[in-house]
Length: 340
Length: 122
View 1 (cartoon, each protein chain N blue to C red):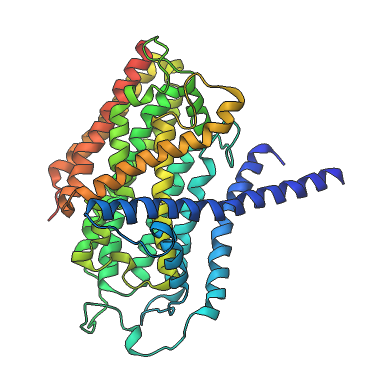
View 2: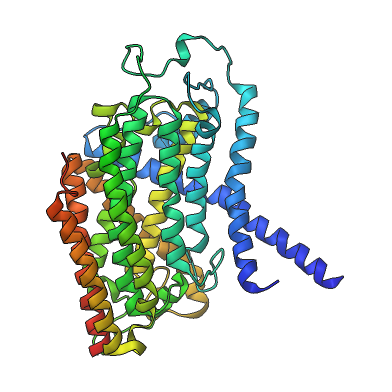
């Protein structure tokens, strides 16, 4: 009887943690959306951006969200209705699953899976299926074109993403994100006590990871799937109202999650060199947040500065440059690991 | 229940939350949003002209199909790289030579696809 009671509480705890994400993910999504998509873009284009809703327009996205709820739920003729409805939800599931393994403190992680980063790479590719579903079900030529472009792009850039992570795994010897953070917190470089060393020893990996993350998020140098001057809005053309909001939420939340994973892998995550114990527990989440915002800043900085690639340049860049570079990086890392 | 399964039960609940959340919000949103269906509204948007066919541009599909095949090869390569990457230090020089041969063979595949023009658009 006792074991059943404990199990019951365990279930409640698990459900509680899952529901916590419902607050965390929209909050971070709005943080990214407000600070980068609204304000940073506006200031880079020499304008103020939204100023009316709340002080400096901080409630703009909340107001937008409420407005989206009041939009009529439209579905095009000849669309596959079930798949059309399911696509944004599948996208959101992929985003939520990313947040499960990101550690924010010495003992603070939703589920410390042993497969860690491998799991992250797996669930992040679910979004390809969601995009293809959305494009296919819309019965719109633009949507289909956008979805195929997105499919081709996401699978091409998934390989460099995976290869860039392998270098970090070789150095740390673990797949668990918590383990990777600890390996960096106690790490050294060529025998010297330099902490958070992966930024230096894996700088090629970091470079590849950033570019691939940019492409996985379909941010501007790689935004052919959504290219508004060519194919309206790609796979999102037929979506409106709350379903569109789900895509939007998932895009910004995935940007935050991938930035957090990049800072965990290459910048040392929640750890600060030479700080341990309770203090690390307290400042950990804030350190991770600062590093994540730094990476997100880089992603959106490139987004607002660079023009769009052509489709052939995109594929050539992934297959002919990033993948060979990733393989070379793995071999060099392994040689150093074996030799030293 | 083992700790291992318990972990993945948490993952399952996390996957369930957005499904329930979106279903509930879409249901509740019915109270807020208008519902006024018209034939004109449900025509697929193709820059103002009426769509005249729903056929798919097949040439695009073939191009993506070849890329998808190349992707499968490299994704499986990644699956084989991960276990080795975890145990580089203990496998030592033997593992290093083995994986170099493995990556070399796959690189030949990439070079073949490159020469055949699969990676070339058009």
